[in-house]
Length: 326
Picture (cartoon, rainbow, N blue to C red):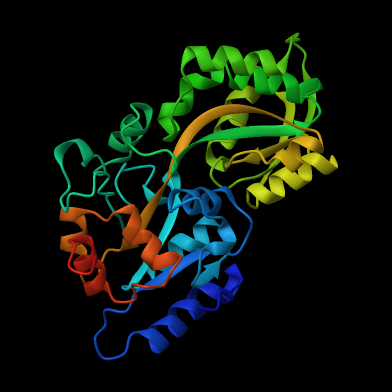
């Protein structure tokens, strides 16, 4: 199936309209899958989980950014997408964002959601599952701050703080703190830091939507200690964060995927600072929602939707899940 590239400004509405008219037919069960148009860690991580694929292997309608992808699924009762944890769950309630439902993953593929697989009710439940290794990795993954060659100046002090005091607020924002041994390894990559009391200057940061809420919180907390520091933070995808960091356009890039060998050759230097996960999402009015929430979906089912396009009807997806078509 041909991939459709749509901008965030009008694409969500148009994509939903086009897919609804072209695919719904008389049944109302056609699967409308969404993916990302911008180079991003969420798409690369989700593709890796589906079987070692890459973002360009994911088909169907593509929209820009995490907010755009979430909105596309919210507007389409037959839609399915994937998103970073903090765009799937509401920060205030800890439950799924209104209009969306997180699809459980049937990890062992036995056709039912076992007790040890049932941890999607709240964001806290899922982050605990990620921390405990119950949620598969990928789509659980480390999130990174990146620069070219080495962190310097105020940016270096900030990154070191993120790995120490900054870990204390990670859980509050819906991420997973690094274990102590991992923190020590990452601090070693930052190098020796002198934290001056009169620290001041600008820090520019761009990149992954996945890290954006956490970095904004870190910046706010850091400025309470160092009010002379000003942060300029923008989201735009992991690809942009890496490109901006390597070109020197920003002090720090936010990257939510593995660092590629070619990027390392160009001088990419990174530290892992927290963990989160990519989760599958459907509309709250999905025609087979009860079955999906009760039994979950397997990795193979997602692959049949996004990569091979074998599954195009929600009833077949449920049947495939239960082995009727497999």
